[in-house]
Length: 415
Image (cartoon, rainbow, N blue to C red; front, side, top):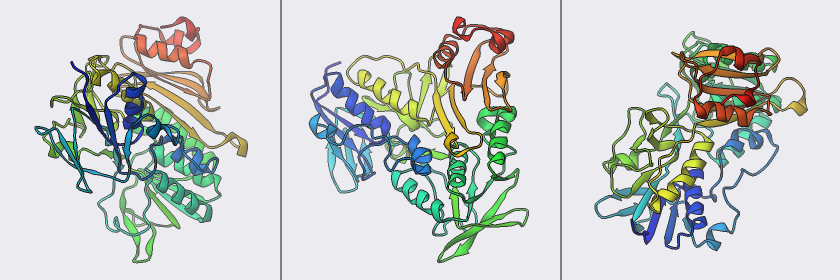
């Protein structure tokens, strides 16, 4: 494979910006165009629902320093949205009419917050959290709010609930599922997070359907449940997950997976010649799991951005890393219990059984999701920071272990 003369990267988030920077680190001397809708320079998302929303910082974690793109001769075109891809002509067209030829193309268009098709779902003032501007506006609103209602008890919803409570607001979280984070963690571990937030005064309305939002031309004023109850609110945050932004790829004729991502092989290549997909949109064949996997977390975006750079330059290596994410909920400096956790791997909640090492009630434990034949498919350490490397080895190695070894043995000796 000859070195490409020009690489176009559509999407200037963590995945796309990391790919651009890694190309230069690896000695690529051709043209790089990084095309992104956001008007800010590329930044990472985790701080938006954590430190920035809490007020511990006024800036996100930038992917690179301010002068990086100019110094590395990377053409970063911000505030520009790609509107069309012509695969045969190897052409990307943006909303300003710019036409960008490519030898190789990377799609890193990320995700957008899901909306709710219910009455009042288009009322002004309904908030979502995905961008830096969203986070700054939401933080300001939390500071002034007396009552906050959050629709959605996933990671963004629970982290935002913690931040709103830290700012002194009364917080209610609504979700049709019976426990927060249930689809990811299962009933027993999700109950730990439910208890954590209850200790901080969060009111749960779980297992209840949403009928709509109340308000008028001046903005949203509350949430109405299917039970008929109305929850008045100064701030309403919709945090019901994110959808991969694949319209551009789909219109170009690229195949989509069952979960809505862009199909890619183990090396992150789509079926179109010289076109790659990374980050939130990439449903790539994962050699470890023997199936397509799509992950919407920080580490996946960063690591796939690094990995794809080598394949753009001819390495053709499969992407094998296990999924990883982390969460921080509440601040130990303000009193009361807090959770900091890391999750590695990919659990199958229907088949795996749970093994717990430590004390769930004290919010100090490690949870393991173990297959019927004894492989650790996933592990999450909560308020324990000494075993991270051992847990990574254990998940990646897929060695068979006993429940007793996980509960009380030396983790460093496993995997």
